[in-house]
Image 1 (cartoon, rainbow, N blue to C red):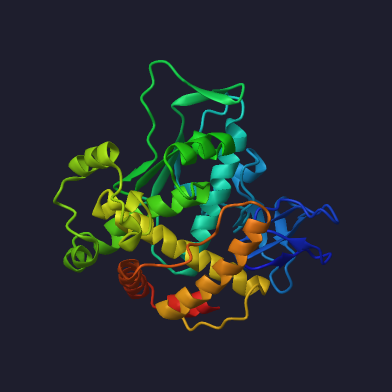
Image 2 (tube, one colour):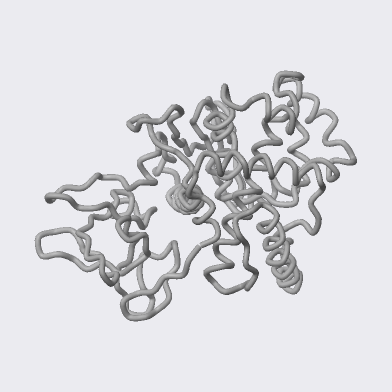
Length: 356
């Protein structure tokens, strides 16, 4: 993620809605791709104040009304789309009559915006049912339990909401936006990480299996990740929750959950690939590393290892979890190489975008 600045010179960050120095309203301008101060227009709407832009804008409905977004839409002939390029993917939002759901929705939207930033950085295809795309993408943010004095209780007569993906539709249980509940689940499931952005990156991995692999490159994918037909997903799921991951999983997989089924292996590895792209993009723009990499997977792995080791030590200084594993097994590198290849094939401009 690049750094941004207000017209007053104060630093701005990707989630900001106001400049803390001059109190200007700020938002994401889709015309110049910047978080920038916005100035009200006499006849309604705003203008982007980023030098050389001056695009007329309107706030996304979820910014102006719901206060869970910070993106603008371009104002053309006095009209603009009511939802921004991220919010328009939503099919279901949380029940805002429930205390705390608006704040959790805001956290979900912030993670989703970061997801889209990385996808756009890689020039990966995505679109809604209104776009010309083979697999439309959509999101539902739903709850099967309600917060009650810091705990979560089940609601009556409501089906359990599973975080997952099906045919382009991603569902995320809103309790994943509760830091305490998510940490409890992380410990219960013995996961090294469990983050909100991690859920988005994992589920979008399933989406890109449908977009980039299904009926297109399945044979090559099977050669790397295994046969996704045998065992069936249901059989693999039951076996995993009965037996857990094999003891030697670090020798072949990026995570314990990746051992469950080739589809989960693909999604977990895809999420790790997006982790690398996002972290290296931020490291490059923030001056955290002077490592130069040319867009090849090997150079990305070297750079990510350097950044990861530095941040791991900083995290240990503060008693926090490691950012990145110290060593990747050869089998995991082979899987990352396959993903790098299909991402590059889907997006000819990705090489220049990733390397800045």
